[in-house]
Image (cartoon, rainbow, N blue to C red; front, side, top):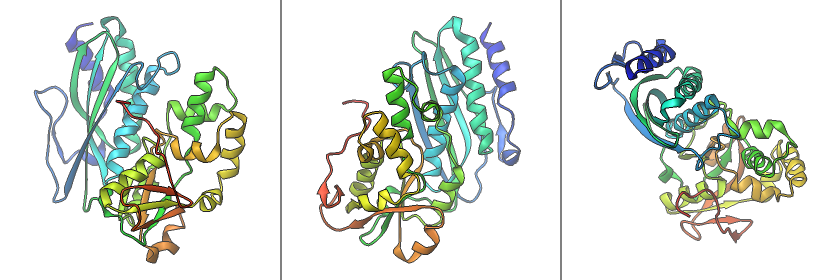
Length: 313
């Protein structure tokens, strides 16, 4: 199949998003895509995934890979308190593997349609290892940064992490104790409304991609504050017992699992205690922001040795 035929098929997969019809002026097919901006802020973010680094093709089918990389990019835009609009997709793939390329595209389109976003172009290249990169663009009236946390703020989760790490553990061990967790690791299904609701109250926010501990410390360092997690508050989360039970079956410590599980793609955010009654309608408080140990994370008063995914460790 020639490049022009490949692009033509991709154009068919990436259907126009009705919400963005007025903004998109030039889509797939020219040297560049063109879209107009409203009188609002624009956010952009890029993620790249590489075979045998971010995914294992013996575990993940091509469509799931596409969905997973799209979810990671979409989450980054939502974590800024904005809504994703446009996606640019680039890939390197073996010449004999074009069928996988189309399945990856279909996976990306599934997630784009869920948030009414539009793939508007990208690039293709031949390579020995499958690599997919997405650049996402979004817009909003205000942006929520990692640097907005202040002493006295509460720390919240909208979902209790752990499923991704427990799914990955089962894949590594070649067992199937809980298929739902395995499926979640391969495609972390998300409630995007939780980001939008959090964004209305958040003073700082981050997408949990590397684990609660590592990402909470990123907020602490950016805001020049200390973040303290209270294990008693964590244990009051309605999903804690279920996570604890499965973690025990897998030989994992439950609090470590919750703090270190990456690729959860759910918001971790801080908000004013004045908003507590409203925020606790959709999120669960797990800690607070203080002035002590600037840039660090504490668990029940003790300094946490932060672990999580690191490309260069």
